[in-house]
Amino acid sequence: MRVLVTAGPTREALDPVRYLTNRSSGKMGYAMADAFARAGHAVLLVSGPTQLDIPEGVDFLPIETAEEMFDAVKRYIGKMDAAVFAAAVADYRPAVVSDQKIKKTGETLTLELVRTPDILGSVRGDFGFTGTLVGFAAETQNLQQNAREKLRKKGCDLVIANDVSKPGIGFDSDRNEVLLVFPEHVEALPEDEKHHLAPRLVREIERLAAERASN
Image (tube, rainbow, N blue to C red):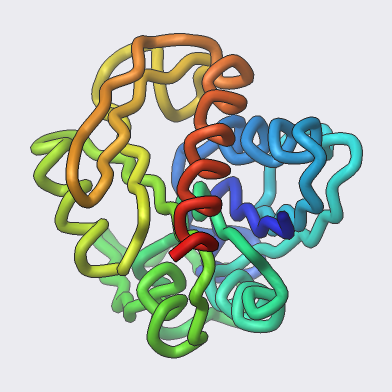
């Protein structure tokens, strides 16, 4: 298969010095890209800034902002058989980016934020993608309910959800514990190293892709 994987955080500039971001390390997305490559698939990894080594055997496209990731996905998604959206993309960005460093002038500072483009939500409709679509959902409450809503709204074949409020898993960690939310059922995978979970997830996605191709 030809597979697109997004990973890491995005950075949304406030001024030349500061930016808005999140705690995503990119480890789960990079583990997925590596597992796909080791399984013999052609992988394009679109990644926000991380401290990770690029997995061997993957094509790599670095981006910084949500807008840049949106443009990259729009450009390449039509060539893919499957797409896995593991990146933690900023939902909002500053409405105005200052050309100069914002100086400390008062007791409070008000920032106006505007929505960033919905990348995963654009894949089925705006981009016309008909391949296997997998999203990730990092949640702090109502894990299954929120993941199922994402599955429905975005047109995914699978949403891989994890509770990032649990200590020791998710953001910044080498370990994860995920819930696989399919249209017709749910399956929980026990906590494990991300590089051990990734091949298991790849096999599920391979199965979904084979089912889609046979229909």
